Length: 437
Image (cartoon, rainbow, N blue to C red):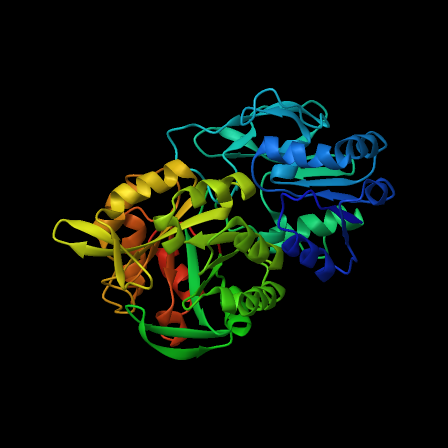
């Protein structure tokens, strides 16, 4: 089996997923190796046009078409699924691989862009000859396709828990999975609970308002424990990042990725596309930028062009000043912008695909989230908003969702053992808030 290295994908997660199933995947951009592969995986993130350019520049487009016509088992993931189609409205005039008949179209402009499906373009009509699985977000669209030994999915199965693992196993072996995951009866997008690991020199730390940091354990061990509790994602923020610490940060990401199977966002010290590429190659699925984006907003555009908006998280530390919130940088030590709501609008416009919103006033206090801030920011953008700062009780989490958050991030309440992810999710379910269980 060969995983195609097109240059527009994070390959660590999918390679690890297949290794856990007992496979020995080869990652290659060599057309000759892909041509001889018994099975082909075509992953991808980012824009349709950039993805097709990357395939054509290596001669991989011709090889993939040939192998598909010969019946070689192919798995297309996220952008990889879209590249298998005829075209996409995202890049008019650029032809796709043509394995799947149809054009990917933009999801409705009046709905919040979904993170569960990491692209705002999708197939809206079922192609002849394919078995289709549908979902709805503003409008019906195809979540997955199957024809013979070919499967294509809009989502990332390697990051989708037991459901994704079962899909990969069935495609790999051609047999039903050993155990089928049970459905929780929910459909559509679900609210997310995200433990945060603030890391310094390879250790988890925690403080109040980014000060008085104390040791809180090993990142890989903590992340694995939270995944076992039902965490939807993990966020790692290097609170003392610098160019000198880059190797330590990359190694931490690599260790955490080996320990978990859920999405991983990494932030701290990312100042360039090359910085982000190192972390994505180590196993991150998204990168979070804060100070560098405030000082040079075009960084968000550069990251989005290189890796797709869905990989770009704009982190904002906001402090209340009278009837507004100002933007802080450098760990809360410097005021950078007078209006956080204006900055979040600009950030979305230039490339951010998600907002990590931290109330500096509430960080580490467990006094509850700043609900006014949450309402103002979530009402200003279409991209998902992660609420951070102040979570101390289960009621605080429910209140954050009611105020418009798409996900809630917490740290000390988990690190100190005062609550668990599965406990919070059980409480949310009782309150009628749909979560993944």
